[in-house]
Length: 182
Image (cartoon, rainbow, N blue to C red; front, side):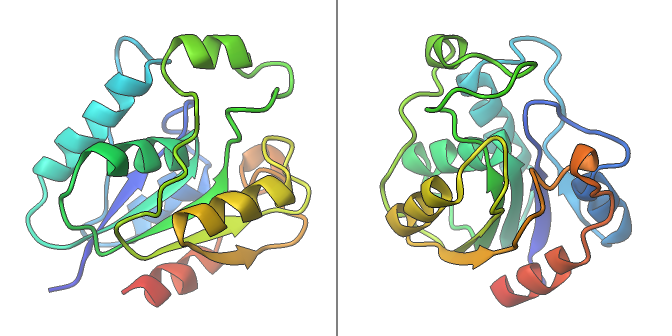
């Protein structure tokens, strides 16, 4: 049985031209954690939404997380023990460091339960794909997260935050990284 791909979006949820949205539409059987209607900045609500989405899936799952979605997946893994086949963790948002204007402040993230970033080894195989010029996470911080979580680090080069603002609608490299987790 092929693993179900479960998309774990970041705080902006589903953006029509985002690579995760396009990937879900293209891959048969792929699903996504639904957007929150309330408590959009609540880490606990986001983790609960991921847990509910996983509960609705029978069989193996590969998580495909981006930005704050990476933090949601890692936070979920600290408290839950459902077997996960693997996880692609793309350009994590470093919630412990100040972010550019337009993103939540470190104080707001702390208030809503995002800090500190869990550093325990993940109980499933994972690939952390990092950018050398991500405005939301330095390459050094991403490499430290990969080491702490036991993730294979894949350096993507200068891809910004791997989102539409950085020129990414489709991201064909995601397919090869997901295949490596199968």
